[in-house]
Image 1 (cartoon, rainbow, N blue to C red):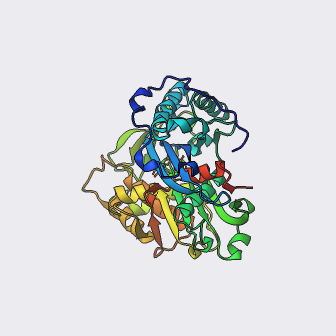
Image 2 (cartoon, helix red, strand yellow; image 1 turned 180 degrees about the vertical axis):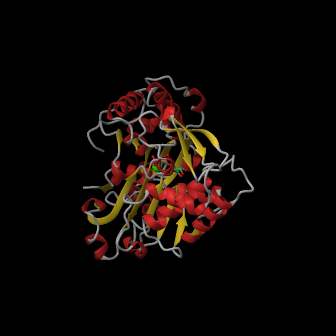
Image 3 (cartoon, rainbow, N blue to C red; image 1 turned 90 degrees about the vertical axis):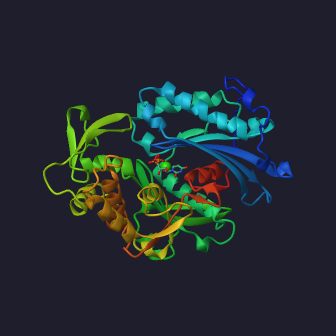
Length: 416
Ligand SMILES: O=c1ccn([C@@H]2O[C@H](COP(=O)(O)OP(=O)(O)O)[C@@H](O)[C@H]2O)c(=O)[nH]1
Ligand SMILES: [Ca+2]
């Protein structure tokens, strides 16, 4: 590990007594524990804060480790929403750390790296406010019994996020260990940003891409060129604000934002990133899929770019692609499912056209499904007949970028 400054001892008031009896879950203790190590990655997303406690087995010191176990816990509030109450953010981080103290054996605490990476929710905050939150998290980390370094807490840029999601998925599928040619692309739809990442098979895809859409990635001394890009503000929750024309409004408290994507009689507050907006359905005009589609294009046209040949790759669609497909009944969600792009469109039409329901339970479903359809087709250029693999977990492990970030922190992958 890199230059290690670590804080020893239990300097803070987490109640360890409850966990003392069973610190190490049985499944996390392989026969030869000398080759086992742990790593803790927190994901400070725009709509949630999660902790992944990994245990790895290192067989070949020069190769990639194997993921042995993951303890995962998620809270549905983004740390960035505590923009004006940083001590609340600290409290949540401290709470989540209890998951780590019970998942990692006490004897390993001092050599287990503790890392937090923040994504688009933080990127959208004013720099000074983000700084205060980051300092608060660093303070909580410094009081933890884990291995904390100067690299432990940071906001990652979208390119990193996209690369790391690709690394995670392909690591879990075994492609990084064996055959990179079989790698799969990743579409990640978060609350505030969205990423597309794949290993181009044809040179023209690289040549035709703007230079900041191609990133170098080094795994075990081999360098790969990935097509990757993150679109800030194109995450599902921020795209709602773009569709409503509300994003960036200096004084949203005084206005009402309307959309033809919302049920006509709908009226409520919508909060994102610590700001509340008053939103309504549009009484005047036809609300349905076609009019909604035109509205959501405001968030896509001129900002999302089509890769030269997006069809050369098989893609896994994660995060809100999966959640929306599951919540709207497009997939069962019992296991990963292959879904053609046109089924998102069909579902969007069905939901937007359903006047029988008032949609009070899920007023944004029409907007969200229409946005996903438009993002995939108008945005990235997927044809209707293309199938996407909707993925939540691979082999029982979360398919989040967090695993890739852990491997990067451990110097197993490098982003030069
Ligand atoms: O380990 C994770 C982390 C996030 N998500 C999904 O990611 C979306 C939320 O995105 P996030 O809050 O991370 O926003 P971002 O900061 O990425 O824009 C939701 O669909 C979550 O279910 C997930 O499936 N697994
Ligand atoms: Ca995310």
